[in-house]
View 1 (tube, one colour):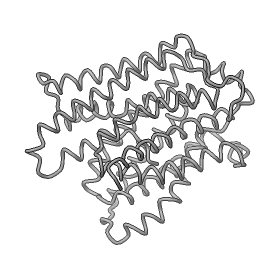
View 2 (view 1 turned 180 degrees about the vertical axis):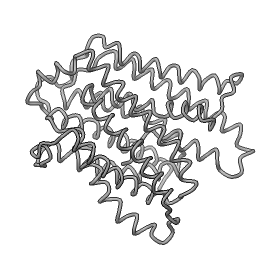
View 3 (view 1 turned 90 degrees about the vertical axis):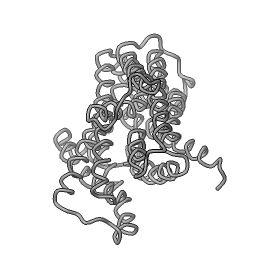
View 4 (view 1 turned 90 degrees about the horizontal axis):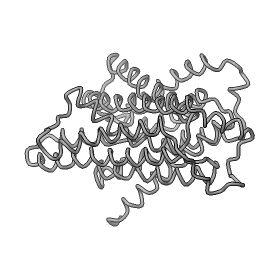
Length: 355
């Protein structure tokens, strides 16, 4: 592979995530339950990952203890079950554009949580420290802008023929345009990303105790399947809601369970190995641009000016934190011997949900 390949790979990764936002949103617009969707998605991911983990890590896997399994269960509950359920409810209440924009806050929230847990430090008298603090502040401004300011809407690129048309389009847009619903959905997404960020920090600690990454992911996915079933059963008790048919719901489950989990899991690992985690994180805004265009064209969503401004602020905050982090890593590089700093950068810079 030549040196340009990582650029093509990150483009593919962002397009895959764009498809996830748009297809999931289309399925929810059709009335597919977000809770049932998470259960089926996690079940599909478990079916995919279990044989791979058995094939590649059955001989080299670290020993499993009850405490390690308990930690995996808790991590799955926080970072997958809670996070994905809140995230998809938020997606249903807002738009695919908002979902992709808010994703840019994950590295910033992760950095802030690591700072509270004293896993990160900020030198306020240095340029890098100031950049990280400003990045957090700008990202917060982006969240507030998306939640409380919508402004005029930008007309969809395709106003008449949408690939994923919604049969109850008028009622759907009434729900989306409700200010209270929009604010609630935005903060659901922020809460989801906070759980996900906490998962990134805690998983970094658990990986030092149990280093088999694929097996760790598989166990968490399996536990999340069970947890998501309980959550879905609590909210959706009609048997008819659980039936799958050849529609957008099944397409969304297959796409997220197999393509997002299987393809991006490998591509992200390969890209981080070749170019580093900061390179991968810095391409996250591409998904925001792609999703804004695709949701307008395929779903007929009217993008609000506030979402665009908020998304731009979040991207600016993301780059501020990553720039400050990279400057500190460059300065500290001669003193690093055990690779700890690189590993923390990897966890703090990954905004993706590989499950």
